[in-house]
Structures are given as structure tokens and as C-alpha cells.
Amino acid sequence: MLVYLDNCCYNRPYDEQCNLIIRLKTEAKLYIQDMIKNEQISLVWSGMLDYENNDNPFWERKMRIAEWEDIADVVIELDENILNNAQKYMLVGLKNKDAIHIACAVQSKADYFITTDNKILNKQINDIKVINPVDFVRKELNYYD
Image (cartoon, rainbow, N blue to C red; front, side):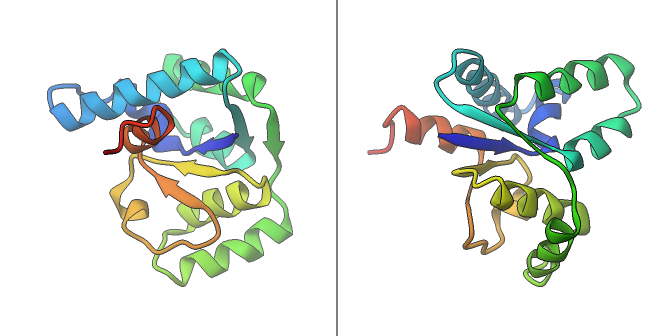
């Protein structure tokens, strides 16, 4: 199984953890990272993740997130095809960067696009399964009733 985590996912553990939902999403994201490290699932990295991570003002966070590129099984570089396909996702109301992330995930043939961003989760995207980390873990561990 191939998964694409967006920039929100990579940054979730650095968010204030007072809110229960944020903590749950953080724990689920960390569990997904363990699944990747244990080669239970495969990871996609993209040029869009590089682009957004390079804007991270926190040097240590930026370096720790960048390490995931070396762990990724698939690396997608930004190209004209991705940028053109992103236009389709902008038509459903996604912002430019989010649309490019989705286009990268689709081009990589990822099975899941994992995000903590409700603005993405609430959009109708038919080309890939969009899911939050908690629901992904529940699904993969068969915790759905």
C-alpha cells in the first residue's frame, strides 16, 4: 500500500497538543510513520512537500520532516503534467498548494492521501481516497464496527 502524507500531517506533532482531536491525529500520524519505518506501508514524497517544507521557519522541524524524503519509496518531482492536473482539483475548491499535493499523490498512484486539513477532507475528490490519520489507522486495524 502506498500513502501520501501532506504537509499538515508532517507538522501535526509540532502543534499544541492540548486539544484532544489534535492529540489523536498526532498519535495516529506517528503510528503511520511507524508503519512506514517497519515497511508495512510505502511512502510517497513530492517536490511540493519540499517546496512547503523549505518555507518552514523552524529549522529543526524542517530538518526532521525533510528526512522523510530519504525514507520514501516513491519521489514525485513537480512537472507540467502535475501542475495541469492540479487545475482540476482547484475546480472543487482546493487551494493551489493543496491541489498540487493531490495531483502529486494521484500521479504517484498512491492508495491514500492522508491529511489533517478539514478543508481538504470536506472536498469531493474521486481520484484518490482522502482520509485523516485517525480514520486511516482505524481502517487499517479494522477498528470500524
